[in-house]
Length: 235
Image (tube, rainbow, N blue to C red; front, side, top):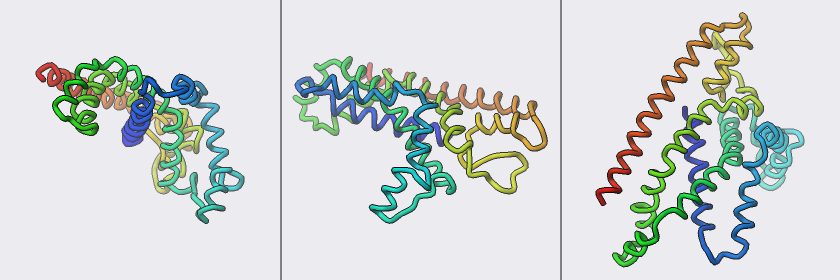
C-alpha cells in the first residue's frame, strides 16, 4: 500500500508541477515541450524497466558509475532494501508522471478564468490561489483518476518483477517474500514459486483481500471527492 501511495503522490506532484509550469499560452514551443514530456508514457514498461535496470547496474550502469565518479558514492540499488525501494519509485516516477501531466493539463485548461480574476481582485497571492482554488477544483476533477492510478500501482506487477523480482529476499520467512514485494507479486510467488509447491488456496485468499482493500480505499476516496465537490458548491 505504501508503494501505491508514494507512487501516486510523487507522480501527481511532478505531473501537476510541470502542467502548471507549461500552462502559459505565450510560451514558445509549448506544444513541442508537452509532446516531449509524453514520450516516457508512450514506451511500454517492459521496455523501460530493463533500460533503467541497466542504468543502475552496479558493475556497468551509467548512472551508478556517474554517481561513483562524481560524488564518490556507490548506491546498492538492488542489494539494499531501502535503495531498492527508492530505485523502484524512481522508475515508476519516470513512467507515471507523463500521465499525471496529461490529465492535469486538461483539468487546468477546463478551470474557469473568472474565479482567478475574482481571487486576484480580492488580493489572493499565487500560493493562496493554488491552495484554496486550483488544488481543490483539480482534486474534484481528477479524484477518480487518482483512485484508478492507486489501484493500478497497488497491483503493479510488471515493474516489481522486472526490476529485482521483489528482492532482496527476506530471511527467516515461511514463504518466499522480498523487501520490495507488493501483495500481487507476493501472491504470484506463493502460487507459483514456493519451495513447498503451489499454494493456490493461500494465493486465492490474498487476491480476495486485495479486492476488499481496494474497495474500501475507493469508497473513502469517492466520499472525500464528494465532500470537496459539496464544499466548492457552497463557496
